[in-house]
Amino acid sequence: MGELIPILGIIFGCSIPMLVIWTKHQQKMSETQAAATAEKAAQYAADNADLEQRLRVLERIVTDRGYDVATQIEALRDQREVEERGSGVPLEMNRKETV
Image (cartoon, helix red, strand yellow):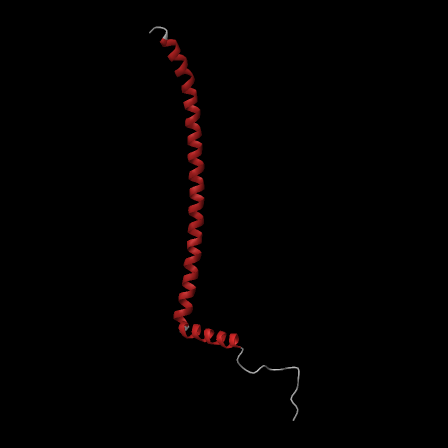
């Protein structure tokens, strides 16, 4: 048992500085992660503020100006159907009509 004490002393003597180094490393990693998390939170807050502003603008457009969104969408659909079918008479703007 007497021979074990110096061996344990050497093991503990070497492991304590390694533990201190590991602890400092973990602390630096935690600080770095906290800084990155704070930066991401700031970016999310800025993005959220931008989205809220856009939503306010859309709400103002729809409510203040009395837009009938459904009617406008249907009008655009009707116009697209006419263009897809090729309906209508093509106009030849280069040729002038003779009387």
